[in-house]
Length: 271
Image 1 (cartoon, rainbow, N blue to C red):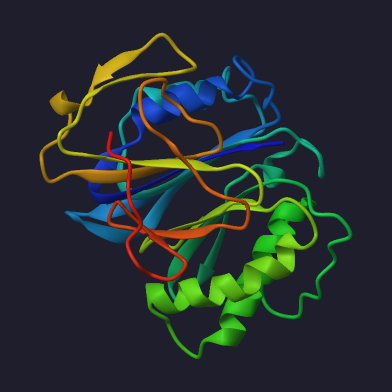
Image 2: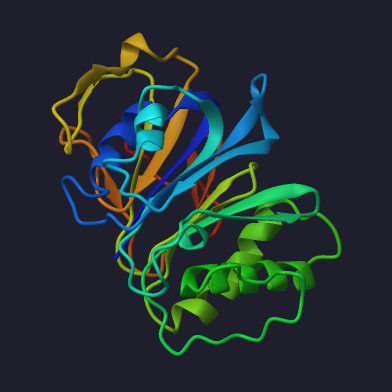
C-alpha cells in the first residue's frame, strides 16, 4: 500500500517539516520506495492561486535528490498533496507516480490514492484518459468525467463536496479507496481504511517527528492567525493528538478547518 500526505491552510504555509518525516517512509522507515510525488498550489499573496508546482520521481523519496531539495526548500501554499508509492498495480515508472494532475474549468486538479481497486473497469467517454496503467489514475479520470457531467459550470466547494459524496462510494465498492483531492480551493479526503488528521493553530507547540530525530517549536514559525490541517495515512508526530477518520468518512478541508459530510464544523484537535 502507498501513503498519503495533504495540507490545507488558512494562510500560505510550508509543509517542509511534515514532508521531511513523510519522505523517510519512502524507503527508509517504511517500504514505500516505488516512486513519490508532491504538488503545491501556488499562493497569490494570502489567497489561493491556480498554478501548481508538481514534482514526481520514480526513485524512492528517501534517496531522491529532488526530494532532498524539497525538504530544505520551503514552498508556501494553501493546498498540498504528496504521495509515496508501494506498487501493487502498474509498473514503477514516472507516469505512474502520484499525485496525478488534470485541468478542468481553468483550474488544475490534483489527486493521490492509497489502496487497491478490484475488477474496476469504468467506461471513459470524455476527455480524461489515463497516461499510466494504475487503478488510481483510472479512478481519477472517472471522477473528473462524472464531475463534468454533474455541473454545467464551476460549482462551489459545497456543491463539489455533495457531488463527490455521491460518486466516491461507486469506486470504493471495488476495494480500498483512501484518497486526497484538491483544486486549490479546498482539500477533500476520503478514508476506506486509514487516514488521520489534525489541525494546528494558536497556541503552537513543539512537535516531535515520528520518522526522524527532529523537534521543532512551531510557535517560532507561525503567527496567531495561522491555522492548517494536516492529513496523513499514519500520524507524523509522537506528541500530537491525531484524529482517525472512520471507514467511509469523507471530509472537506477549507482554510485549515475540517468540515464533515453534513457541512457542519467538526470538533478539531489542536496542535
